[in-house]
Image (cartoon, rainbow, N blue to C red; front, side):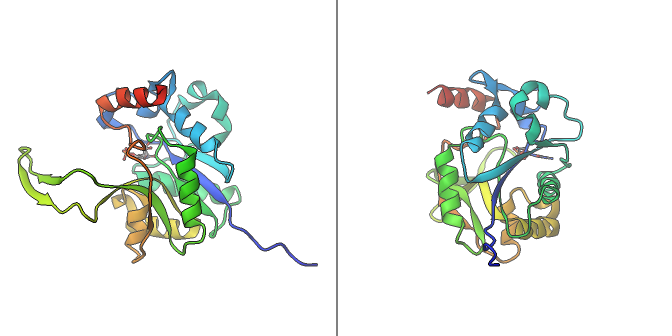
Length: 231
Ligand code: C5P
C-alpha cells in the first residue's frame, strides 16, 4: 500500500495573555470594544477567513475570566496556558498544539491579539511566501519615516539610517519544532518569534504587508482602529 506523503499543516497561535498596560484601558486591551466588538473578535474573524489554517489557538492567562462571555462564538479555540512573558505564552501555546496533534514540521503562524486590522489576504501572502522556505518569515513594512534615537529627556541622540529597516509585524510563520527551540533558547528576551529564530543564525523572510496592520498599543490607537474597521 502506498502512503500519502505527509504535508505539513498550518496552525495559527494568538497570544492574548498580556495585560496591555500601555493602552490605558484599565483592563486587558483585547476585550475593549472596537467598532461594536471586542478587539480580539476582529482578529479571530480575520484568521477564521483563511481556509489554509487548520486550527487557531488563543492563549489566555490562567486567570482570564472574560473570554467566554466576551467571545462566545470562539469558546472552543482557547487554552489558559499563558505565562509572564510573550515568549512563555507562545511556548505554552506550542505545547498545547502538540497535545492537539501538531508536530515538528507543521507551520505555526503566531499573531498578536492586538493586530485586529489583519486582512486574510496578507496571511495568504505570508503562507505563499513561506511554505517553500527553509526558515519561514514574517509580515513587515519598510520604514518610511526618518528614524531617531532619543534619550530619557526626549532629546534626539542620533539619526538612524532607515534604508534597510523594516517594522516587524505579525503573523510570524515558522515550523513548530524550530520556533519552539528558538524561544526556549532565547527566553523572555524574545519580543517576537523572528528575533529568537535569528539568534540561531537564521534569516527569516520579510513579507511586505501594510501600515494598516498596526498593533493597537497606545490610548489613541483605539480610535484609529475603530475608524479603519468602520471604513
Ligand atoms: O505587550 P505586547 O503588545 O508586545 O504583546 C503582544 C502580544 O503578546 C499581545 O497579543 C499580548 O496579549 C501577548 N502577550 C501574552 N503574554 C504575555 C505578554 C503578552 O500572550 N505575558
